[in-house]
Length: 291
Image (cartoon, rainbow, N blue to C red; front, side, top):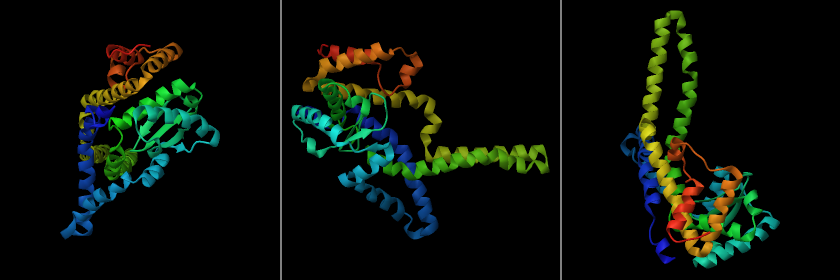
C-alpha cells in the first residue's frame, strides 16, 4: 500500500488545476479591495488571506469548519461502538493510524459516505446499518480518497475561493433585482427600461465571468470536471480492493444495481461525478478482483 501514498493521483491534480481560475479571481477581488483601502500595500490583503488559509490544515480548524459546511454531527455512543471496530480494521489493513482521522455521521438518509479535508471521514445513518464487512468496504473506499490525496488540499482551496464565491452569490442576488430596476425606468420610455436592463445584465455577467472564468466554458468543462471526479472514485475503489475489500465492493455495487437500477443516458453519464456501478464493477474485474 505504500505506493498508494506516494503522491496525489491525476484526479487530485486536476481538481487543483481546475480551481486555479476561481482562486485567481478571488485573490484579484481581495487585491482590488486592498487597492481601495490601502493603495501602496494592496497585496497585503490577498497575501494575508492565502497565508491565513494555512489554518485549514490544523485538525481542530478542520473539525470545526467541515461539520458546519456539510451538516455533519458527532456519532452517538452506540454509533461509535458500531463504527470504530470497522474503521480500525480498515486502518490496520492499510497500515495507517486510524486515530489521525475523525469519524462523523452525515445527516442524509441515503446509503453513502464521504471523505473531506485531511482527516475527516463521514458515513450516513443508513450506511451504519450495513453488516460489518460491507461497512468496512465503504470505509476502505473513503480511506482510499485520503491515501490518494483527493481531499488533503480541498479545504484550503475552498478557503481561497471563498471571497469569489461569496461575491458571486451576492451578484446573483442582485441579478434577481435587475428586472425591477428596469421597470423603474419605464416612466422614461420602454426603450430606456430595456436599455437599462440589458446594461445591468451585461455588467453582472461580466463580473461573474471575472470571478469565475469557468462559467464561460461550463458546457465544455462540465464533462472534464465530472471525468476527473470519476477517476478519483475508480482510484479509491482500487485502494479499497487492494486492502482486501474488492469482493465486498463488487457485491455492494451489485446490490445497489438490484435496488435502484443503474441506467443513465449518455449525457448523464458524462456529467456524473460518480461512475455507474456496472463500470466500477468492470474496472475492478479488469484489475483481477472478483465478487
